[in-house]
Length: 280
Image 1 (tube, rainbow, N blue to C red):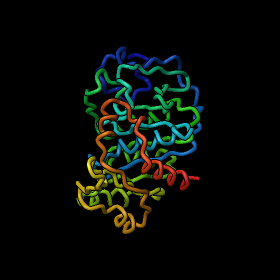
Image 2: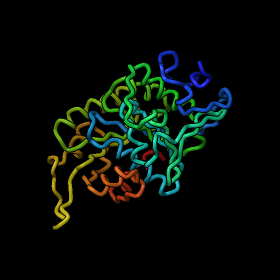
Image 3: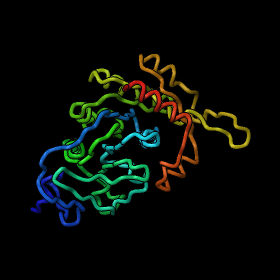
Image 4: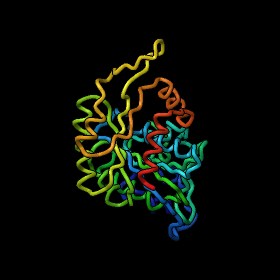
């Protein structure tokens, strides 16, 4: 077995050629030099509500005002941060004695994702829960993040192994809950809220994504995914409502092009200002 396998979460159960995995180990780890001031977790009850987009927008908004930011893509089976930021899986991840070196984006956001270790970005990761959780722990413990003002963690949907691992392993300062206006989405998101409350981790608030769309002809707000319920659900759950974000075709186009950092939203700026104030 190659020395490269020693720091891999698949150690002992992977049949891949270690020489093609893209990790170069110079030496064994000598300890961490990371100094991460705030860990923000972004959660959703179900998929398809735009949790990963909200994660990317939060990180970009923080970086735009001069904060040192990282993204830990903990959605191991459905990673999307590299695509949104335009970093391909062929980049090749190196390592030093302090850990894996995360690639940086145009706004100097450091990102670590399982997609950087796959030969092709659409290759599936077919792992059971313990291996998924192990990969997330490795991204926290064996990545050379350096000094960050904020590390934003993009969790997979639901309340399974990976969210539980993150809440029990990482020093989480606060959770941002993401949902959309549909009744089904809010029914499921309440499970996520209750999980966070049972874990006694502060919830920074609720973001209602795709809250409305704006007609390009008359500027009328259209509630195409149903009537907004974010304020009421947040109130019923005794958490704060951080704000609503529109469904915007320009954002979709930028994400597809790997240019999410170019999207500027006053709504997101307001949400991030509230997050900063809650953490200060």
